[in-house]
Image (cartoon, rainbow, N blue to C red; front, side, top):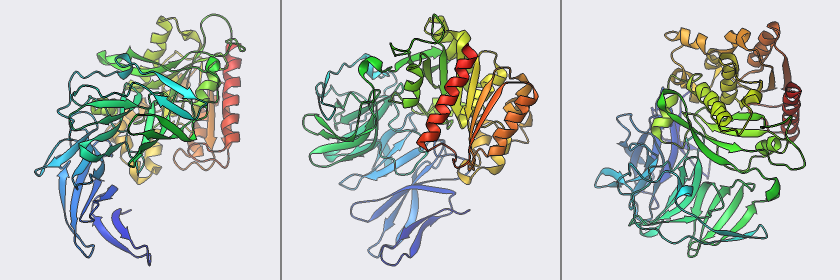
Length: 521
């Protein structure tokens, strides 16, 4: 399959090839005067979060594209994303060459930190909520006014990511403004912050009630974004540029009263190789529903998919489902998650099925030692790549009372043979070459270690799933049953990879809860 960058005519539907020869293209951007075109490209076996190139070509008066020049990424040691042009025609792009996805700009034919960025600070404050307190007021759940938006003193750009791993096209997580200002969606220790930064390096924090920001936009009066918070459904916000007051234009409902809401508690814990990982802990929260059993609560560990992705401290009805029923939840950002810098993101190279499992277990031990949960009543669950980690944890550790795999990978070598072009080399990066590293695959394939799983497992699968196809899950179910392991299996014939129907999502949660309840009785 060949990928190209093309221009489509709105008049007759014809197309013209603008660039070809690379394996993938993303994020084409045209300057305001129409004279320059920038884009991101990369070749296999790289992934967009490992190594990409920023390219630029001139456009003549007839719309013909000239020869392309690689501005950054030619050496293959940085990941670039989201190129855009300022109003005066300068090109800005996010690069992680300094260890974090930060805005860099062209100047004199070279790349430098964007205006006001300075040089990345090695010891910049990494946790915003420990150093900056913001008061906020909510008016009827619609109009919000925020204090504490004064400009800070100039400082170097924080050592933090300003984007997530580019799994999708069209992401806007930063925005160049007039007079060298930048609007930034920053991620620090899993938390998201919306920041306006001026050319001198002064910053002000906006919309402090929210903890994740996407799709930034602006006009003369307001900033706009899609935002999420620990207490609200996703919302479209309009933020007054002068004073910081904001309005919720759509969404933003609060499904639970504060007394019933379990809020995320950020924690960092020690794991293997002298390193650490991050997670969000949600204690049980429902006075009308006591926890199952007595004493410290049981725990459900959520393992995110990707695996080069992340969990965020935002309202998740699945998490509240468990905390409403007396379970604690730990939402884990294992080593290899995005949003914690390039070194952490690349930590999974060759290590998938090992360090992520190590982090799951270290998290349970840490919470148990802190007296927050009962480690003898811990469960692990995950979807897709998270399901793989959950199955590996059940196969290679004797720590969990039970677990759940939602369309999870049980045979990575089989997945590699049928997956699509975008992820065709992903398994080689995560585990290794299947021929050269055949023993490593064997050691990290849950299907081949079904006899080592003693804890009961419940499986959920979509019948139309083309990523983790049904036979892979069904082979795992059959193998466990052959070894006498209690198993439940639920197939939703019309679902794909990731369930969409509300009835199926509700049914899966209810079945999983009843499955765990039986194991606690």
